[in-house]
Amino acid sequence: MSTAPKTVQSKETPSLSEKGLKAGSVGLIGAVVIGVSCIAPAYTLTAALGPTVSEVGVHLPAIFLVGFIPMLLVALGYRELNNAMPDAGTSFTWATRAFGPWIGWMGGWGLIAATIIVLSNLAAVAVDFFYLMLAQIFSNPELGELSKILPLNIATTLVFIALACWISYRGMETTKGVQYVLVAFQLLVLGWFAVSAFVHVSNGTAFDATAISPDWFNPFAVDSFSSFAAGVSLSIFIYWGWDVTLTMNEETKNPEKTPGRAATITVLVIVIIYMTIALATLSFAGVGETGLGAGNPENQASIFAVLAGPVMGPFAILMSLAILSSSAASLQSTFVSPARTMLAMGHYRAISPRFGRISPTYKSPSFATIAAAIAAAGFYVITRTVSENALRDTITALGMMICFYYGITALACVWFFRASAFSGVRPFFFKFLAPLLGGVILLVMFVKTAMDSMDPEYGSGSSVGGVGLVFVLGMGVILLGVVVMLVMYRLRPEFFKGKVL
Image (cartoon, rainbow, N blue to C red; front, side, top):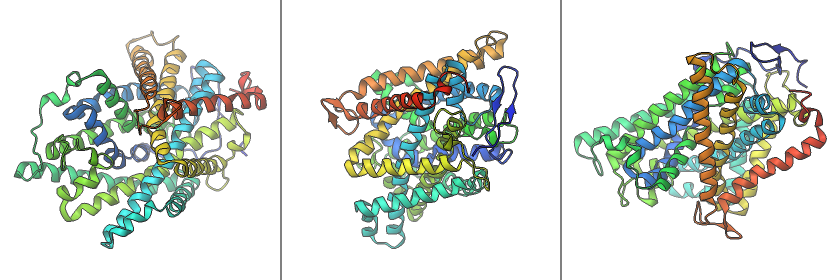
């Protein structure tokens, strides 16, 4: 079970309980590396570049910048909350402190549900690229088709989830060591790809050499608001994951300062990576809908799988390895967030106290980490067996959950600091204006995405009773959280009556 509560004090809050995690095990650089890993730039870019180009064309850099703005604003709010309340529960704990146990519980549910869904998807992507890598190494295309055999696919996916769970169970030091290697490799390959693409453009050997234009950075030049909103929704998804640096706050050196700084640096590093790759891809391939064009629907599933060969030549296999390492690294680092959120919820008796257990050997959330793995595995087996569309549409619906819990947490910052926010220029900007703008933008995107996803044509085109499957899945997961919360209210009334947190 968790250790007897120790307390941490701040100027603006009563004491919070420590949970027995290994303090001081991660520094600033380690936290940034884990943050970048969780976002998984190589995996995210290969999946998101094509669909975003199909919505906004050459204005891809502008949309990436627009998506970056609310992420940075929310990250600044997260930093202020962490300075005042360094707690592994992050969204759950902070929203509970600001708005009460009901909204706080749902904030925690949003984070857990989003990460569980992504864990299953990351494992599936890692499996696909694992078999693709084998096909390239042994020059046998049939090996790449093995991932389409459902029983083998599911078995391999479960092995990947189990390995990631095992590493996470062993604590932050093991996690950090694995991430240094995997993140360094994928960033090296992405840099190689960008430089090679620009060299092809310079030498006149690019597929559709396109000169970089200032208009690419103008978000107001996008054809329609629907395209703009769809593009922003996609770009918000590609930045998601930086908040893992905050869930490690009880395990970092200088917990009041390091996690917030790591979150801000992570978002800045990622936007630089994304802008570089976006410009390189557009310059080399253009936005045409034929051949290697970034707008070709046939290229949208994995843009790097199509462009790696023409851009990197015989070294294209490195891109497959980079995407495999990116998805595998993110699979492992993503375990950090749900495990520590469930740890906090168990510790503060919002769910079963079993989730508050700490491994005596590794000082990690033992029960919560295993529970996250079982939930991710179960989710994948069910959705993959029922329908590939269900799995794909759940990932599309993920944007709603991201906007939901990020928005709640940002507004929690505004409300929590309402008494001190107007005491000076700095608190006004960081505790009020930045999180307010970021939270409102994300909640507007939540409503917009929910409305658009009711259309059966949204996502895979599947529907239930004439309503888009994306909407049914997204709202279904949120409503499931409400049902579970009501059950917990009957079982754990002390939390919901404000007696614990």
